[in-house]
Length: 464
View 1 (cartoon, rainbow, N blue to C red):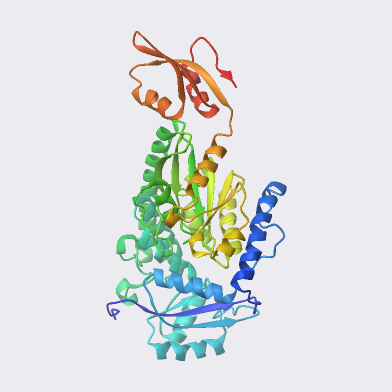
View 2: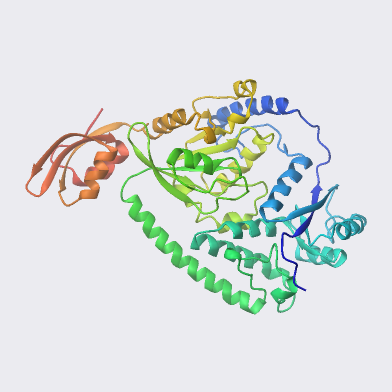
């Protein structure tokens, strides 16, 4: 039977396998985080092979309350109306139902009493566990991966992003369809049944195989075009700086503040899914490209990292990374580590990095003074544009660390784009027009000079 219109009524289930943890006050967490960020800078130099920028600090900063708060935010981002929740602490997971028969019976009554349409689990479920739970609850059951995929489907805007989400959704759905599958009308629509663009996902197994092959072919075509576009862009040597961070750290707000762009800045999780590139000019008049990327998340499904590897290529190719953290979050350390893990999967952990502590306008003066600031740890308030000048200066310094060189070149006058790029990125010391060519003496960063060597005149470049 079709589901009634309006937000789905969702009942949340969170499982804690670690037991209770002692709670810290906000001030204590902040002080602890300050020392951790300072230690992160030391550890980055001391042990680049470590999976955590926080060295020997124990993991597991997330309490079950933190996990549930984040899960509520995920559910809300998927459009759910929250009608109830339960937390179960377990020593081990039940192989049949994840939470055990007794707890399942207890939840059955709570779900019925709250008139929930869907039960959301903050954990991945096997196909058999999902079926067993649905049979007992008489309600649709969605696990963490399916919920995140649903949110991704809502926010994908580019053709490539939509294709990647749909492929990940179909790969997730395949082992969960019995026999030849079911008609979408039997599922009633709602969370977990939507493809990109509010379309309904295919649920016939035979049709899914054909659809997956079609999507894969389309993705190859889109990626081929994107590769060609990137190659054309890279023919002109402009560095890329990539914004990365935990979801909802304020990356898009910072991106807008630095570029004066109109990228959607929202408090909803994954409001930014597709990468966005904008040109900005640093204090030295050097032009660079700034890239805004999808926010990372605790326990981000590995299939999503794989699916979005191509989308995250801007991070892999970046000359510099801005790792944005929410300075007000009591879980900044854990969030930092989760981002670093994804960067490691992308083989981008050892790139030059500036750590940006955002949302400092929400801190008291004492809390701001406790932040562990340094050359590579900078406090900003993107929404108030505070601290951005210092951030831009540091970006400039790190990108212009290569030596300044001069080179004498001879360029055809018809190369208008190249001449404009030289004016924008370098300093023209001498210019002389000769027949259909322009003779130039150019001073600039070695990365620019390397690109200009092909036009080099008789005299060789001089370093200084």
